[in-house]
Length: 335
Image 1 (tube, helix red, strand yellow):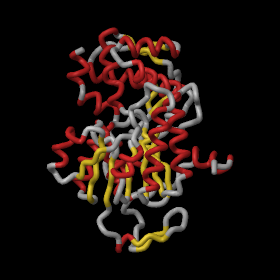
Image 2 (cartoon, helix red, strand yellow):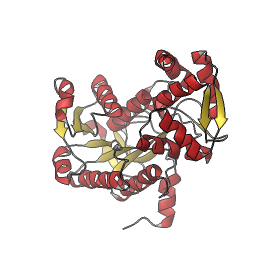
Image 3 (cartoon, helix red, strand yellow):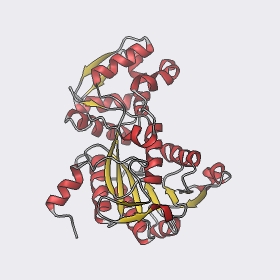
């Protein structure tokens, strides 16, 4: 059954109360929908990370291994690429989101699953179909809790395929009957590095975001938060995963200029000109289109939120833009 309008609206916009894994937990705990869970009696959970061959997925697996949170399963279309993780005790399994039977096999015996959004954004509808298949396979396999890496304030926007995919994936998870945690990650600071290096060489950084702001967050902070949530979240909740501050494009440019010592000025452009700039910097068309979607979302005010999620779940203050750019200063100046 499709979600009724009131529930549909609440699930899309409501941020459930933030709960850290060690906050207020007793031997028995009642989750947000009233289910009583006996955490003291639970055996070591089996935790699965999809897309473990990607940059975010590998960082999540590394974090799980470091924290010894449970038995770790990593899925990928190319298991041979994760031989190093297998040697460290990770159960590496083959999984192809275009082959439902492979997902049923890969998800067998798993207690908790992190669904990392796939990178199939070159064909409209493909990624959403993959996500829906994965959610169905998780339910069929008896997975108890699913976490999903989403974006800030996703909406049904057919003209913005990236945002649209996230929205309908969240809906599929809400309708699954499983417990879930939605991780609405703000834009990774690392995604701008290539374009920023190009802009530093020209002295101008085009923006179509107007006065909109975003709370850039490092990929490592997102990975550590996802690992902690995968190991410890209960019930149903939506978490914004953000950096410690919001920055407008002008403020971001000012920080970049200070870190690199280069002259850099923000230049307001149209969305089409912004896309042309991204392509000129060397980004693939599908990546440029995704960043354009984020830029439009920022202009509309959907990304300017700061949340305590990273600190609450990891115990670490999230890295700010200045620290990430400083860490990558040599690369930025080499362009």
